[in-house]
Image (cartoon, rainbow, N blue to C red; front, side, top):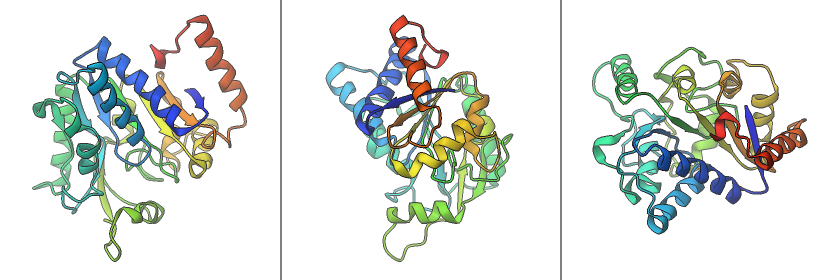
Length: 266
C-alpha cells in the first residue's frame, strides 16, 4: 500500500482530485465508487471546481454508491445518497443513467437487492477506482469490525461506536439507524484501484493499525494491505501514529523525483 502524507486536509483533497481527474481524462468512461462521509467532501468540492473552471467532463463517468443506511428517507440529510447528490452528483454533468446508488428502502428481499448491486457493478465492467473514507473503528464503507473480509454487497448491523460518531448528522432525539447496506470488503478489493482518504487526529489510531498492523476482520481497512494498487492519502494528524511515516514520505518523494509511478499513481 502506498502512503502519501500531506500537511493538511486541503492538500489531501487536492492530491486526491489530481488522481481522480487524471483517471477521468485518461479514461472518460471510467467507473468510480463514491463514498459519502465527511472526509471525501473536500475532494468532491475540488472536483466540482475543476468541472466548472477546467471543463472536467463527467458525462461518460459511471458512479456507484458504496453504502447507505437502511430504513431512512433517501432525502434525509444524513443519507449517503443525499450527501453524494448534494456534494457532487447535482453539481457536475453526470448522466443520470450512469448513477447507481444504494436504496435506503429497497423493496423485497435484501439479499436479492444486494446481488443486483453486484450485478450492476459487473455489468459496467467493474470499478476502476473506489474512493473510501475511514471510520474511527477502522471500518470502510459500512463494513464494521467483525465483518467477513470475503463478503460482497450485504446488509450489516452498525456498531455502537459508528452510531455514536454519526449521531451529530441526525437531529436531536432522532435515532441513528441500526442497519445499513454496503459493498463488502471483497467488492472493494475487486476495484482496480483504491484510494482511501483520512484526516484529523481522530483517525490516527485506525490508520496506524490499517497500515502497519495485521490484516484482520476486526479492522476491515487492514484488508487494503492485500490490494496491489491501493493508496492512503493522509494529513499529518492522521499519519501521526505511523511508526514508519518518515519512510513513507521518503518513498513518495523518490518516486515523484524519479518520475517513477507506484501502480496506484499510474
